[in-house]
Length: 90
Image (tube, rainbow, N blue to C red; front, side):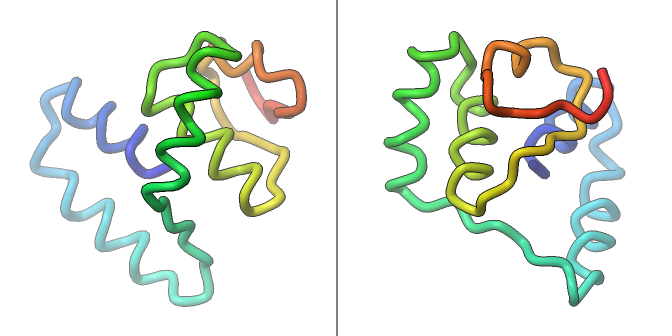
């Protein structure tokens, strides 16, 4: 999710790059951008408890489930606890 990238940029004091990243991703007109709804956020609360994830991390499997995605490109070991998510690289 974009939020993870943005969090990383902000955490690493690279705030000036946020606009460029979001704009670049938006420029890929054929890329489907997943929408997160209030219902998704409520459902993510269950994943927080079930898998011991932060709220932002719990939104990722919730959104993946909604769109039928099972592969995740991440090196975040927290997602190892989500049994149905297949991490492509660690």
